[in-house]
Image 1 (cartoon, helix red, strand yellow):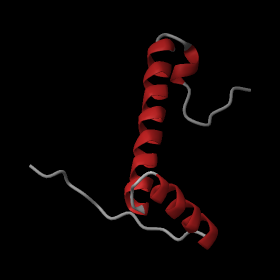
Image 2 (cartoon, rainbow, N blue to C red):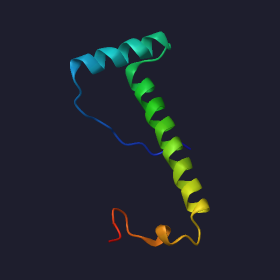
Image 3 (cartoon, rainbow, N blue to C red):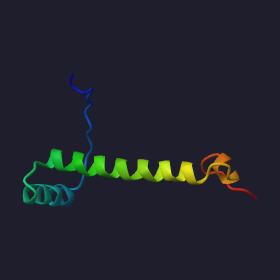
Image 4 (cartoon, one colour):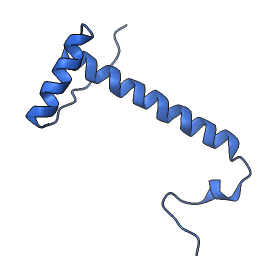
Length: 72
């Protein structure tokens, strides 16, 4: 069964596109495959951080604060 997919688009500077192409070429990939691998890696990292925070802050009053909310 094929995974559901959606299109991801965005404009970048020519310099960034050229740099991405160079890195991808050096790794034997095309630009799209390289960008997807970088994004997947970042999502795994952030997900892991969120999981650790949730586990470590169980019962901690800071965990119940709304996002961006500061105590005064």
